[in-house]
Length: 630
Image 1 (cartoon, rainbow, N blue to C red):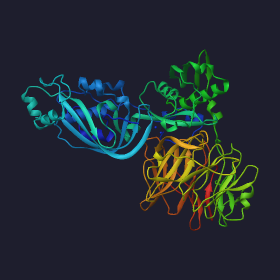
Image 2 (image 1 turned 90 degrees about the vertical axis):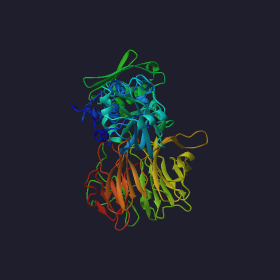
Image 3 (image 1 turned 120 degrees about the vertical axis):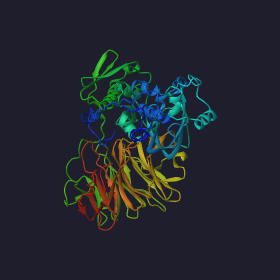
Image 4 (image 1 turned 135 degrees about the horizontal axis):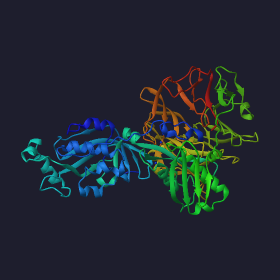
């Protein structure tokens, strides 16, 4: 840069970094096999952009702009950014304390030469010190940057002024001509940063403020993997780490050893015992090499395999890892490559044929082949297919679970469940109802919501009935449950909440806590709200372990949203035809068509593409309520 002035606007397009307090995902959210996930971050290698350091003659605005640009680089412990701070401010700045994430372009309101620079920004979320992102209700904060001219004899080495001193300095601030008259160039440095507003930002000691674009450019969302309580499935916990981190494998391993974040507390466990120490972690010639010590060396074979699976799944996604994952426990080195595949609940792909449940025009349960247009419908197994009344919203368990089928009665008040032995029960009758569409988790539990009372219900296998799920009052906050969609791992649910006045719906992801005494199943953890509120949420499903697909109505538009909870990435939006109000995702790791359904008019089932092409022509008309397993 040849000029001594740095324009503000170009910097803000890329990044805004200040300092904020905070409080827990990848651009490609498709499920991948362990082999596909290896080296997932290598497609677009991170290129560090070195920001220019300070130099005499920069205006206060120039200094703030360069400081913001340097703060987003995560280079060498923020060495360049620290040069823009007074010596006292350097001691107070804690850039690793977290990140407050804002959206849009912030507004600057000060003269370039004023030692008090102010701006406003719209905050949308927080990344805590451990790297876990949590959306917050959109809020505007105001941030004040207070600067000192460290070259001025009276201020060289001075501490930060109070507000009155800065206000006086701002009123008397001279132009560059005054610097010339004094025979020197000003050397402005940041002495303090203060913020106000509901976004939670307060002072210089509390981290960074970055735009969404800056977070996506400079940080990488990676999942660390824990186990469900039964040790059958792996469950992701997303964290953000700097892309330029030379010790990314070590940083990710430390997050794994530290245990799950607040969003999964009580819902998952780790086979890696507390007290395990990381001795070394690196990536060499495409292989991830990890050395651990402590109680992890004494695990039983079953627990050791689970621990190695957690490490293999977590480290396989580190950029540069496209080979083996080798883990040394004590004196023994294990090849953990691919061990995570033993904890998959879903297949690579579905067996060909009619593997989707639908309801035909007569209200009967049938099956549909999603790979064939206008193929003949198949006959669903068991007594539910011969149910004497009309049915709605069928559901079935995963292939890895004993087969159960569920459906609602035509008035959507009765829950009918077909057990693995073929017996058929009405497990619940809603008064006045209706019930939300049922869905199964990995344990074979069927979930629904009594919309008349706002009660979340679960029907465990062989229970002969339903039990109410406890939902924390703090989670509801003026809302009632409207629909529930369990993740296939059974450790989390996406919960649609409807405001008490019926005017707005929002979605949160909550942990599923195991029964405690006589209390039954509970929702808890630190629920992660999805960004946004809608007039209607027609349907939703888990697209992968880290992403959801939702059909919503906002304004006059029906839309499909592809959402990655726990990430700063905004939802991908696709406009849909009116009447499309059902969605179902295949329970596979890599392949399968996403289907949408229309329940009104002639009805129909369509392929929903995650591209501008949108909906396909109808796979079949005259049917509705498509449902893959889950």
